[in-house]
Length: 150
Length: 150
Image (cartoon, rainbow over the protein chains, first blue to last red):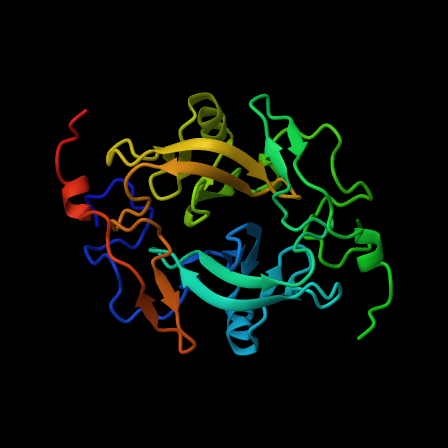
């Protein structure tokens, strides 16, 4: 809605929700990437945020496992391929603008490459210092520096 | 860690967590914006994702209310300023790369400008069609098209 000052949608044209919308709209991103949140489907804990392009989203839909696009490596990132810490997708949601993806997942092992259950293992204090609020689930050295068993 | 294939951090240099880190690192974003997730602190529901720059983050910290940066309007977006649907920040977290922000909030009214509790009110089906899974909390017309009472 044009009259809505809280509407972030650049393409607002009086029609608020597309009637025949089909999942996320990757054309809304200049680089074809949209943020994707992984949330534990049982506990509701936010585990991580990564990025998806059309190909990653399609493979996620087809495989039932979370597949992202790694910006640093410039390629698909099949979460857990190295660590074994896969995310089994239980449900996918999109936001009102269809430019953010929410995955409800069953996390196997630790979501965070630091070995924590969630990448959000630190609280920001009023002075901006960070407090680690939990213990690691796994030692990241043992996860990433050993040959994969499968 | 350089050896970690799941590490999205471009600046990885062998030190996995900065010892004197101070909140989110806006320098990691080419446009100075980082994604910020708002999550209901009671229910764990993911309400919305928006963007913050350094100024928005500083005002959020100082005011205790969520302040974002609107990409479409190119200015600070004090959530709820028009609608009254403010977000009272209970806790702030950052992820392992310090490039994503998680706000645990007490949402007043509806987070979504469409009148839903959460912007993620639609499920993506296997064929990519969308299913609305809930009712609106409020009529967006009544929220945005009337003079604000306060």
